[in-house]
Each structure stands twice: as C-alpha cells, then as structure tokens.
Amino acid sequence: MTKITFDEIRPYDLVLMGRVAIDFNPLDYFKTLVESSTFKKYVGGSPANIAVGLARLGKRIGFMGRVSDDRFGEYVVNFFEKEGIDCSHIKPCENGEKIGLTFTEILSPTESSILMYRNGIADLMLDPADIDEDYIANSKALLISGTALAQSPSREACLKALEIAKRRGTVVIFDIDYRPYNWKSADEIAIYYSLVARRSDIILGSREEFDLTEALIQPGADDKQTAQYWQNLGAKIVIIKHGKSGSTAYTDDGRQYQVKPLPVEALKSFGGGDGYASAFLYGIFEGWDIRSCLEFGSASASMLVASHGCSADMPNAAAVSDFIAKAKAEHGDVFSSEL
Ligand SMILES: Nc1ncnc2c1ncn2[C@@H]1O[C@H](COP(=O)(O)OP(=O)(O)O)[C@@H](O)[C@H]1O
Ligand SMILES: O=C(O)C[C@@H](O)[C@H](O)C(=O)COP(=O)(O)O
Image 1: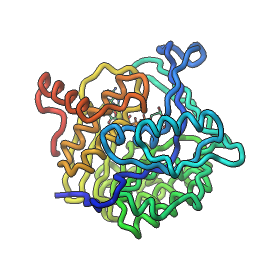
Image 2 (image 1 turned 90 degrees about the vertical axis):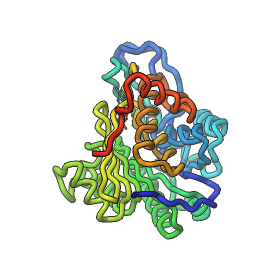
Image 3 (image 1 turned 45 degrees about the vertical axis):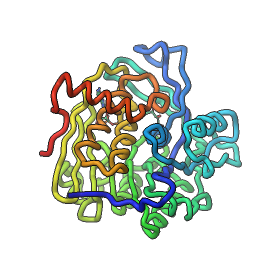
Image 4 (image 1 turned 120 degrees about the horizontal axis):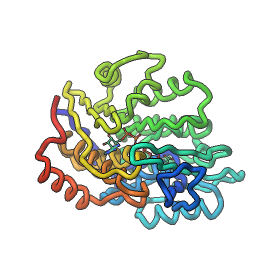
C-alpha cells in the first residue's frame, strides 16, 4: 500500500513557497464586478490559503515568500503570525514591488471569476538567496505552488528549493496552481511545470493543469496516462481534480480512489481547491489511508465553497470531522470508493 514516509523528528511539517496576497471578495455578491461596490479583505493566494488551512488543522507550518514593504505586506504577515505560521522567511521587497490583489466576482454559486493585479508583483521577487537550506531540511515536506515558476527570480528560487529538498530527503509536493498571469507562452508553462512535476512525490492539479504540464510530453493524455507517466518518474500520489464532479487519486501501488464532493449549499466556486489540498495533506501527514485523506479534503473543499472567504474560513479538524459525520448520517458512506 502507498505510504508517504516523513522524517518525524523534523520540527516543521510543511514549508510552502509561492504567493501570499490579498483577496477582496464582494459583500454585495451575485452581481458583476462592474456593479459590486463593497468588498471584504482577506489574506489570499493559493499557497497562503493552504498554509492557513494546515495551521488550523494543527500542523507546524513555515512559508518562504516576498511581500510588499507597506501596510498590506504588514497585514498578511500579521495574519499569518496570528495563525501560528512561521514568518521568519517572508521578506519585504526592496524595490517597490507590490503584493498581489485579487478581486473576485461571485455571479452565482456556480459562476465565479477572479481578477488579479499582478504587475510588478512582490511574490515573484522571491530570490534564490532567500532559500535557506536548513529551513527545508527542518521540514518534513516542501510545497511548491506552480505560479511561483512563472518568472525569475522566483522560478530559480523554486528550483533551488527543489534541489535542496531532494538532497535533504524532504518530501516534495507540487500544486500545479495555474493562473494565466505572468507566463509568456504555453511552452514556458509546459517546460517549468514538467520540470518540477517529474521530481515531485505528490502532484495535485485539475485536468486542465495536467494538460498544460504535459503539453510537450503527451498532449491529449487521459487521467490514467497522466498518473502512469508521473508515477514512472517517481510520483507516489497523483491527484486529478474535476471540479464539481469530484477527483481521483492514483497511488503508485497501481490503485485508484475516487471522491465526490460532500453535499453543501455553495456560495462561490473558488477556494475549494485550497481547502481540499490542506485537508488532504493533513490526512497524509497523519498517516491515514487514502480514502480518509480524500474525504477530509473533499469535506473541507465543500465547506470552503459554502463560505465567503478562503483563508479566514479554513476549518479545524473537529469541524471537518463533524461535517463528514453529518453527511454520512444523512447519505451513507457513499463519498469515496476504490475504483
Ligand atoms: N460546487 C461545489 N460543491 C461542492 N464542492 C465543490 C464545488 N466546486 C468545487 N468543489 C470541491 O472543490 C474541489 C476543488 O475544486 P476544483 O474546481 O477542481 O479546483 P480549484 O478550486 O483548485 O480550481 C473539488 O474537488 C470539490 O471537492
Ligand atoms: O490564488 C489566489 O491568489 C487567489 C485565492 O486566494 C482565491 O481566493 C482563489 O481563487 C482560491 O483558489 P482555488 O482554491 O484554487 O479555487
């Protein structure tokens, strides 16, 4: 059976790298961004949301990143500190680069979009010199968020961290996290995504994200071919997400597991991926079987699409367990299965 083994004596469970940014979600939702006028501010950025999710689930989390040298940079670092996330490796930018701003549009529970301001962006200024070998060696796992590969110097910072993680026995998690900003071409996306994916132990992505990653390798691959390809190169778990239809985990013992979304009244359609990633990885850190990890991930995802924020609404372990117990009491043990 597939099991990820961690070096249990390491003080950090997970160090993440990528963006910490700000989300502005409309309070007067079910309107276009043209019409919305009141927004609530939250700490955002997919890896930042995952960091908060895992911290609330009780894991020891560190973050390597760059923020703007202004009140917004101060805001995100303060929030992280309150959540118990180690901020010793988050640095302010020196040349006026600004933190990312994301304005979201919630048109209906199933139609949302995001508008990102990412020019002269702080998070992509993460520099190889910021990458501290001891920090990575003191963590059981490293999570690289794919958007951090979009530009230099953040790209080289990720590749340096990856080399260190491989050499120091830190488990590598790759969340493909595609955002159509900052990249120059489809070739560039395929080259850098595949470079990291081929050396990762756990890869998470949507079908679209794997298509981008495999564009030069096996265009048009199906989920099984995708899993097989990365597992031949050493991946232990490949997760392919299909939005509202659920997701499938392929493990390197040749097994496949499926999980469906737990029923919920959704408010928005973003945030699910980050809830899913944090709660799924929590189960992996706890050494659970894959079906339990997937159910935890799917439950947290449902809770996130039902809530207004992302980071601020990440649930703790008791809340996720309670949510699953209620769903199973009503619908039976029907959410996950081995295929
Ligand atoms: N409308 C929904 N209702 C319940 N769960 C949802 C809904 N939309 C997404 N999810 C959950 O969020 C997870 C991630 O969603 P997905 O759209 O695939 O990724 P991302 O949010 O990263 O784009 C899904 O696997 C599912 O569990
Ligand atoms: O990733 C970002 O920079 C924005 C997020 O904070 C945002 O709220 C969001 O889109 C969540 O993404 P998802 O979980 O992949 O749906």
